[in-house]
Amino acid sequence: GAVVSQHPSWVICKSGTSVKIECRSLDFQATTMFWYRQFPKQSLMLMATSNEGSKATYEQGVEKDKFLINHASLTLSTLTVTSAHPEDSSFYICSASYRQIEETQYFGPGTRLLVL
Amino acid sequence: GDSVTQMEGPVTLSEEAFLTINCTYTATGYPSLFWYVQYPGEGLQLLLKATKADDKGSNKGFEATYRKETTSFHLEKGSVQVSDSAVYFCALDTDKLIFGTGTRLQVFP
Image 1 (tube, rainbow over the protein chains, first blue to last red):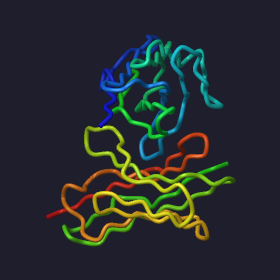
Image 2: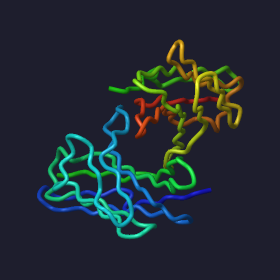
Image 3: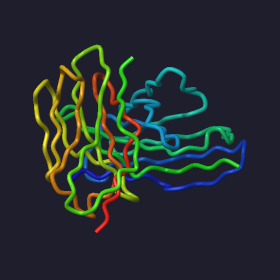
Image 4: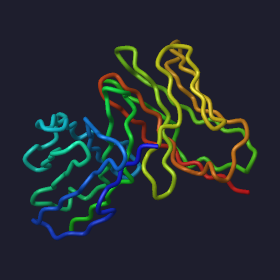
């Protein structure tokens, strides 16, 4: 089946630094990738949708200058949390799909970010 | 706006017990409905889906029926196994996926 990986699986950083999270589709070409955020005991919240080669579409309330998304190739998307603060601590999950074929999103295992 | 509500967990069962995890939704259109499962340390996996009213999705012994009249998509399994222990997410898709909060299932031998 389709496999999506994320790196790193967890990261601890100091307040004010930037953190980059990678999302890769390992065995298929992802025309669309999605980034979600999950708070403890809450549902996944869609942050943004990115299509390969174009700018990401951010959900209402998500700061595009804080959460930079790049989808430079059909197998890689990155989320950079810029000038991270403790309130950015969360579980970030990506998913990928090849929508011309099917709508199913394939999810990565998530990245836990802790900002001190 | 569109939303999904599912029962809080954890749900704790003995092996071979019957499972029901309730899920109801609110949507202005006619969404597709999904159940995703997340095993420990892994990403979400699609378990089953239904795209229109009265459709029944099924996979690995799990079933859920799209009930438009009650706006529900309850997940059921007749006999759970220890290996079914995971977190289950109900979701709807109009133009994007909207998830419930997840229900943790713990099955003991």
